[in-house]
Image (cartoon, rainbow, N blue to C red; front, side, top):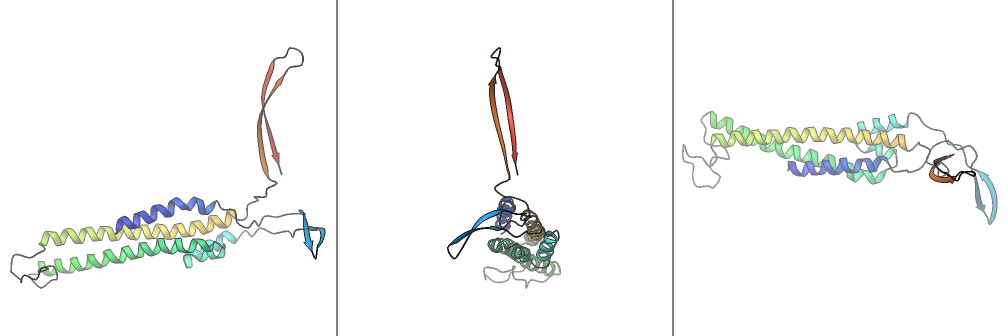
Length: 213
């Protein structure tokens, strides 16, 4: 079970950069971008409305995801992330509960065994009859099992907390990136060039840098 949780965590962290780099709807300010707008078959020049940047949006998204995982993604309109968030957190919670249940069972059996009882569930697993002094699970096996499941339970808890924190970070970063100016008119053009001197024909090498807003 713990391997399944680790695999889920790896996939979640692997896809996290993809979450944050998606463009989405741009909310950066636009002064007067001219566009052809067609209405009733008539083409005319219009102006896009100016969109203001909301500086509190990242904080709100992070707060919503902290209150309820996935709520920040809904606030950012990234609905496709909800199955990933709940699958990751659900796996972590399931693995924690699974290991915690086994830990408690082996711990209770070990405590009763040490107290001198022979009625625990691991004493006669094959129903061959309770024979004092010859249990199916020895005291050492019970102790090793409870320590192993306790370790896996604690690891599942740490991974679940990390996934919960990653859910908050993803909502915050995504809200930040949605307000960046990613207009197609914003570009950077880098080109090398070769020129010859008009007198001695010596070659001149250079690099041109053009930044377009």
